[in-house]
Length: 259
Image (tube, rainbow, N blue to C red; front, side):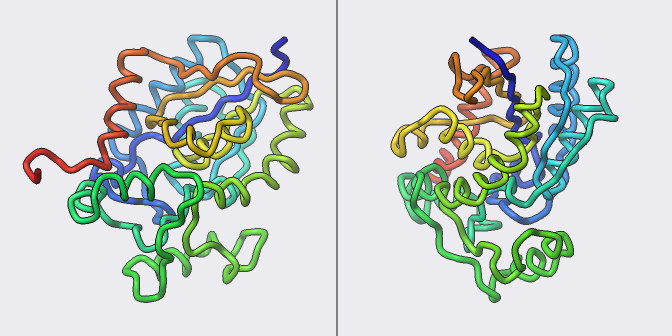
């Protein structure tokens, strides 16, 4: 029997989503379309009568901005929002800033798919010569983390995302859910995928096939032990959702004019 409802939300489209670049820990605001996605998500959740008791986000602006817009559209701006780097997007290391389609042309679609979607394959690490290294590691937000800045990742597999996310899930988010709050996690494609893998027991192989489009809330109904009692549900127009999933999956493919 369903006892708890948990909502996972990949933030609305950001500027680099639109440009098909690995954004990762580079801080980006939402694109105009991303703002609309977040607002429409909030309106849909309001129409369906959902009420949140607590919202969790990463410390990246696109995640926070999405949560604000969703809550505003729901008329629930007062709901507490808690932020943690442990919900950040996966750290893509040296791949940050690169165009996925161009990489598929240079390295092959299969290699790009492994870098993007596999469970335990780690991209090359970022170093001080990288054009975005200073922007990321001199950012004041990373002085607020619960680990020293020098211990923050320089690259991550999805497995490593789950490893740094689980302590926060267990120690901070679970108590909120078990206290009876309906929780929204407004985060990123890979932090949400990592948590789905944990909650649903998805295999290392099958997680490659799990795709989350931007701005589409995922409803999980959980029992008292926080195990799913039914399959996850992506809320909204199902035809639009399937088209959005296909668009995400196509990001790592060579574009036709380059073939």
